[in-house]
Length: 110
Length: 276
Image 1: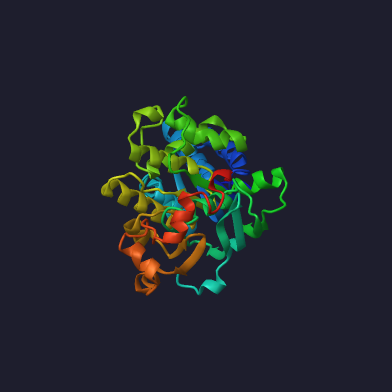
Image 2: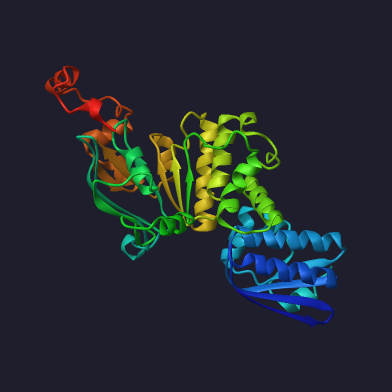
């Protein structure tokens, strides 16, 4: 897994790539939990995430909840169908805000 | 399962597997392949060898001869370390549930994570709650196993079996002893896991309705031999008398061979009492 963090139009954008699994989810957790306190608007871009397991999903849940508690906004970008299937199994597709691309996320109503 | 089987990745390859208990042959040189994303149901009556086959597949027993490949790896001569690594990718939902009575449901479900990973406690707790959501046991993590019904125990066992997101899941008699509604909900769960996680699932059962609901293919075992491997429609259409007996729920009833029966009673047949 690799990650990149950048700022764009008032948003922190964390891009995650590759596989988020038992080996790499601690790294993803560290990145996300470090970014959450610095950001009131966070986009987690996952277009290049090829696989995510339950530990990765748990990491997203924790980051999402922590950001909400801090009064921040979090949205997920570009989830591939395999990732969406895993989220749907846990009914998280009804919890997370998911956008097709960064442009639509930035222009979406809060 | 729209692709031809030959194009699908084999997840389990059983090759000419023979096993004995003492002098008694339990599996008689059977061969079968289970492909990625497939639900394979193994059926048969008492003494058919289906439970013995399962014990071989999950590494609890070693064959007298023949071979088993799991996820492309020959398990015959694997080191203990390699076996441990391999079986991290395999989940097993035991018939009894096999939860530890001294731990809460949540602790039971997290146990494989504690043993095999270095994940943060918070991550493990969320993972366990996610799995409890999936098996419709949300909020039950702090209960003890003794506080759960039979159906709930089975679902909790499923949650533990899939906590590591296994590539391959074995289910031993998931419907046994359950009422039809609970049994049907477990079948639904198996199908959801298969679809959402692309899991390969092997189910050992003697429950016909359940087998027909969930199976992509069915292997029918009888006295250590494979009678047939085929789709639900193949099995339904089979003109094999033993398979038809199974469909008509007469599989448990052995066809009586008077000579063999007398020999058994008088101790002149196989050395039953020397079985392992």
